[in-house]
Image (cartoon, rainbow, N blue to C red; front, side):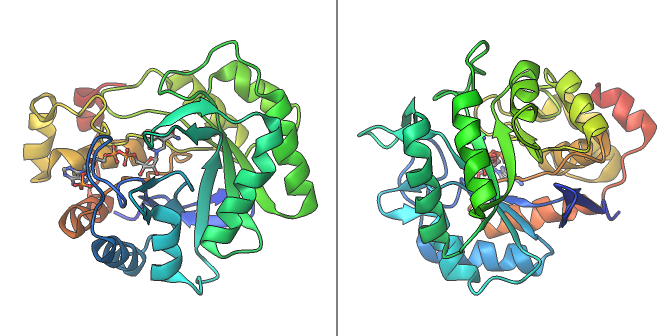
Length: 285
Ligand SMILES: NC(=O)c1ccc[n+]([C@@H]2O[C@H](COP(=O)([O-])OP(=O)(O)OC[C@H]3O[C@@H](n4cnc5c(N)ncnc54)[C@H](OP(=O)(O)O)[C@@H]3O)[C@@H](O)[C@H]2O)c1
């Protein structure tokens, strides 16, 4: 089944099954750097398989292997239909992990790092990623930082803006400053806490882009809870998890992350799975 396209920010058509680049430099948060040649092969194959929306960040890097540089080496000069989304906000500590948040004064430099490393004059979509950790920083204002990104958009360095790791109050705060094209939060078949936010995005024409669509290793998907549906479709748990996301709302853009060619093929094949109403009831939500 073709899950069709979404018009990001009302102007950029993207296939709803995209790709997340975080796993290219390293497979796990503690893991060693991965072979850059494999990362380049994965990116080229992803585009061959129809990916036209790649989610990245300058800070996706480990021991000299960096997602943005792999993307540039694999895919530049970029096809006119390729949308590259990036994010700014977290600052890496000496251990290479996000440890603190950039203040407003640092954001231009971080946007420029992305422009340079991706080799573009303008970024298609830039998320302000709030919080240094995985918990949503409820009560923390993003206004001063989002205003800086909105000004960079006015300057022509950014086409569309997004926000990540946020709640409904953050979304309202951001929308009062500038149009929000996409929200990126943790969400998957067994982590449906943001259903209300997803509905709000759908109603407002904003893309909802789940991070950790396969559980991300943070709260991995429990395949046994999905056994009934996976066996009905002869599919893997990862494929059903992605098909569930795509069926959940026409505003969902899936960005499964992998550094493996085999997993990439498997994930892209999930676009062919057409879940039934019975499947959706079984999976919940
Ligand atoms: N905004 C944020 O704060 C934030 C946070 C996290 C991630 N992200 C973005 O969201 C994207 C997706 O999240 P994610 O990559 O962390 O998590 P994910 O897509 O939920 O899962 C990736 C993990 O699952 C494994 N995997 C991938 N395909 C698989 C398959 N078919 N079968 C079994 N295992 C599979 C990967 O290992 P292999 O690499 O070995 O396949 C990796 O360990 C990221 O790439 C990144 O672009 C954003």
